[in-house]
Length: 139
Image (cartoon, rainbow, N blue to C red; front, side):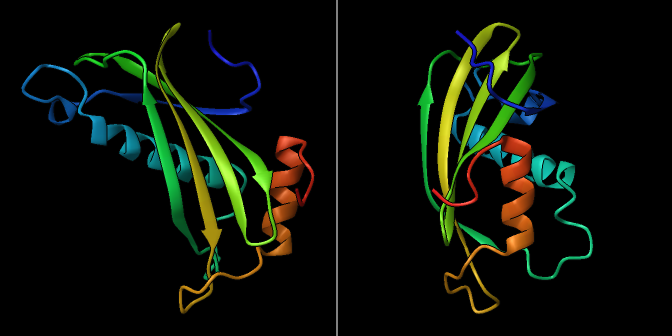
């Protein structure tokens, strides 16, 4: 069953180099797909243009693989921010091919300053995400 509460998604094809010797989508590629979706999400929210302070670190990631991906599939990667904390935020992802759900991924991202120390998420970033996702600015 696919979730209906994702407000952003991107389409990406499975590439030849993404397939392992068994003919399936390599498990590590899912994290690259999620990263590409995250980039598209922040571009969609217009948070990347002209910003030198858009720094966050991946604090934790968890993936549950549900079905194998294969060469020739066109994938949909859905993304949502489910929680905005003071210095961190949580995102959830689904990787699907049509109605077939291949993986669910969750990540905790930590906002960082120029020295890569954790810091408060900037107000503009918090506001745009909160408005887009209809979630509280702090939870």
